[in-house]
Image 1 (cartoon, protein in one colour):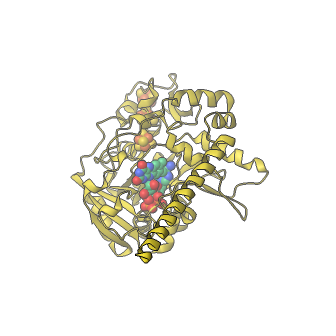
Image 2: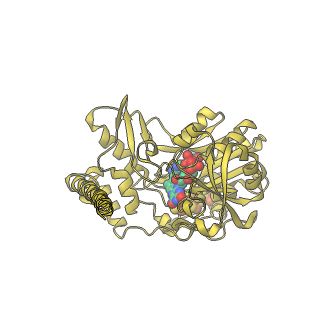
Image 3: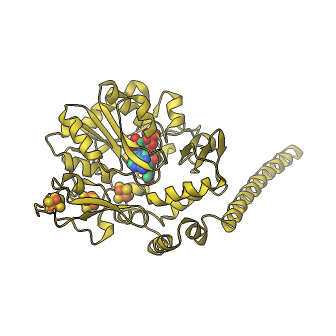
Length: 399
Ligand SMILES: Cc1cc2nc3c(=O)[nH]c(=O)nc-3n(C[C@H](O)[C@H](O)[C@H](O)COP(=O)(O)OP(=O)(O)OC[C@H]3O[C@@H](n4cnc5c(N)ncnc54)[C@H](O)[C@@H]3O)c2cc1C
Ligand code: SF4
Ligand code: SF4
Ligand code: SF4
């Protein structure tokens, strides 16, 4: 019977709750909104299924994997898809193919309040909501059952999520139904708590207007390599001056505790295909992303992943890469959590979003001054370089 004593050993995948036929396990939120299983002992018959389905350990299934993944830089040929996806829109090419074969696609989308949840899509229009990275843990409750029903009905199913989610799904589904299931994971830096995102949106709406759309990472305005969030209030575009959510993400102060203990930060992926931002793309091809519009790293981990890739090559620009040139940090080790991670959570639970975020300097006067000074320093350095170049030219002319 599942009993999570150490939170760093549970990623909140819902596999245990989904497999329990006695409905003995509910997924309950902690202070930051992360879900953990809670067992109702009066319903539990001690069958052990929940323990055996849990794959948040080093023994997750990689039996279908190549010895080493095949690596590629990929960009969709349709520039609209690239502009509206996080990196090179590789996900769109793969999911298009599944939908064209009357399959269904599962990915991270939104509720009406912009909380992040996994959803099911039968059409490209429904699927388009899954484009783009949502830097918060998605809620999987109820999804694994839906996927099993689709597979039992003989449908092709694609599931896209974090590797802890794909490994859990594969374990829950089992070998018999795995054939029609395509798993796509992402190289994963970690996920902040859902409550922080929810409270942040409420904080922004204190101006009296309702948010009508969100963008965790506004690539169109700031470029692929930048990380700044933006919002629409009706027709009005808004980007917070000090982009507090993106800034906080990189402090690792509100990530799930299991992200500091992640078993999937390596090249042995629990999925058919792995997607990532292709950091270091210049080592493979100097031109493929010189416009900073975005380029996906695609790792093919299984024969099934490779055959799906081969079926979309006409839709994408492909650059073969050496795996050693693609080894970014979260393919090598888990993210190191902030030393004050637990204290942050304690204060957050007692005093709420605004107090905690300003105490840690993510919102408020100090943060604004910090960003302002960063901007001034960047401009000074830029001007300094321009002046040096001009002076060099003058010297050349004088000679
Ligand atoms: C929390 C998080 C951390 C990431 N960390 C890294 C990293 O360290 N290094 C790196 O190179 N790339 C990272 N990425 C992945 C990267 O940003 C892109 O998603 C990837 O490059 C694929 O881009 P794409 O253009 O092909 O598709 P995209 O338009 O990005 O869509 C890819 C898929 O990501 C899934 N997705 C989005 N948000 C979530 C979520 N919260 N939970 C589960 N699935 C989600 C969607 O289901 C979607 O189908 C991270 C993404 C997320 C969400
Ligand atoms: S990692 Fe998943 S299966 Fe394991 S205890 Fe946590 S929610 Fe349950
Ligand atoms: S041991 Fe069996 S009955 Fe008890 S919670 Fe786990 S799966 Fe449910
Ligand atoms: S870092 Fe690991 S544990 Fe955290 S969400 Fe990503 S895959 Fe799951």
